[in-house]
Image 1 (spheres, rainbow, N blue to C red):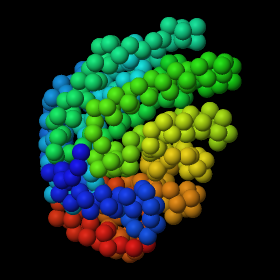
Image 2: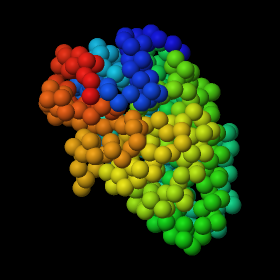
Image 3: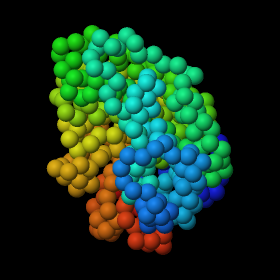
Length: 363
């Protein structure tokens, strides 16, 4: 798939800037996406209550995302418009093994995401796990992929979606508490489960890349906008509540293996995982880190200069409200080598005026 995409009129220039950040790791530039109000999301919120819901019609979902991305198209920012398979977010992997899939609606974002209840009571049931590409859920996954590819063609891309491998997968089997206990009491089962998860994740992600064409040789990303090659989206969330030593023992090898199996990828780190920054930044194949903001921790934007000293020039992605971003931009206080996801832009015109300053900015 090549430019132009009709919802990304300045795509070639945007892609040039993204390459400078994620491939060249340029430290003198900043990139930004702008989020003015979207009427389609407000309409969704009126019609969809928060909470558990049924699996939605994927044709309705792609039409909703088409409306959202069409509205955003006049914003000349550094984003690459793409749609994320929210329904296949986390629940897909456990669901493929027979787990109870639960869908959850978030009216504020338009997401309908998925999770599963723990699959196993204990490790004695692990041997019964099996995956069949003929299963109903896997066929539903392939159908939604085909619908999204067809519905996005020529207008926007389809984003990669999260891996659930390593300890994230063990969480889906046993829940978090039993997972952490197993690292001490039954580590041999954790090793077997992580190996099983690697094969399952590779199968799911290979199917994604078999169906979704690359955009100018790269992968659309809900986190990074675009990354070169067949890039995946990894999670180290279970280690946010462990020491760095546990990440080195149980996380690094698995993450580097899956990144090497594809063409690298992105990782996100929540507020309670910032002690992992130095270790995660040295992962082979890692292209960027998205920094999450969580209650009880300072927003990443407010401590970004300090974080930047800990991440060895790795491109970072942070969220910030429009007023704070615009003020720091005007005062020339923004850290370079960062993609800023700017929330609550007043309108399209304000967003575009701000982007003129972003493109001219040098750190």
